[in-house]
Image 1 (spheres, one colour):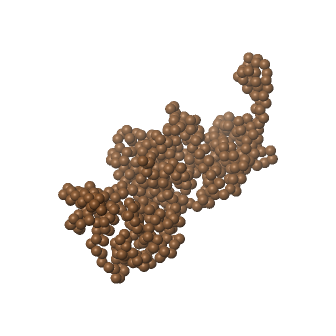
Image 2: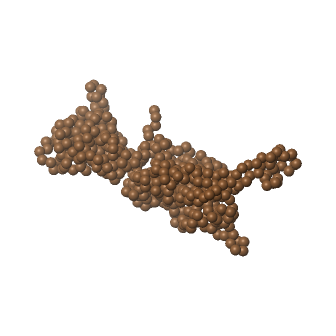
Image 3: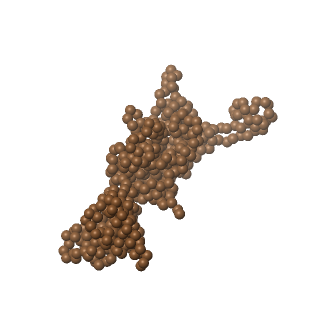
Length: 553
């Protein structure tokens, strides 16, 4: 049997045009595009024999980027050589870092095709082997066999992707930006990590035993957990029960924690899918705990606390380059614990990766153009605020009367998901208000919807509502409990079961006769959940009678 598709909380995506505009403004891509424009001159710009900026061009390239702050590629002085010196021969502060950032932007421009680089013509001459193999000579390096290769500097000119970056459609710009993200990720977690995220001996790169596959899996898990935490309703950074069913983890990645009872339950209030697409900042300790602390842990062990410290440092290293490409906003750890949040671009990119990996990663508005059955199905697993937003978008595209009729029609059925659809239907009808009354009255005699209709009409003070029969009350009770059976947190269901037994002393004597597909399953659940042993035994006996009755029919 195939594993169920992992379902994640819904997120709010910005329109593609706004995302594309944001992509153009990300520091690293913006710098790469400006360098590509800078090559738009007669004859292009000079490069060395490896395609890098020629020494004589480096200062002009840095000037083209201009002064910047926040670690963008133009920050700090850049000399004509790879390093820089102050008067008196001392190394200029920040010169090496700035040079590395300039090279990063230039390399990205070449990788994306924003510039085309011709490193020059290679001249190959055969000469007798004079015993000087491997020594510099005649302007080139003399390999064994007497062959001399002369590499001259070449030129860089604008590449075909520059037009895509400047005048492409939103989808084309976003595609280019995602390629830039892929480039940065590959350089960060690859076999020879480079850039500010990979200092020698760090948790990410440079250390002995670095495993690119493990580093990629760790990053995937961190981004997925950040995505889930960011997508939740306002809940103090907690993952609400049932809001984010977990699924298969990336190979080698730790399983996420962060349940309502776990250590990741602490932290600032999350904002959920905000209207502007901006998510709340997540403290690095919260994200680290979601990766390493097992669910249900009350007090982390010293070993776990030590691992948390290591994981926080590793996250700090990983997120620095991702901030430069606009995937996250990152405040590094210092005197206080750092934090990170997904940018609207980050939400867009991580969601695409999750969809490619087989996750069900909905976006708010997905159901707006779909039918009522699809809406009711997704609402059943959405957090409250997201469900209201999705419902409002769906209703805005339909007349109130027509929407009520479609919703009630979609709520019919005997399939396992039908009770959840009916529960969601009640909630949507409540948003419609009195305009739904004609459609609701029309289903008073419907075997699936009659109980729902009577409850709704009574709650809205409608006149002339016929009283429910005992059969209708029992059927609606079973249907309501059946809609709650899939919840991860059984606390509310347990309270519902206890309340039912208190209010209906002879409930089990009558319930087993209810003609509902889930009657036996509901009674078995009541027997499992009720704390009183005698009541639980009575519920199991009723469940057995319900199954026997079903087989007889």
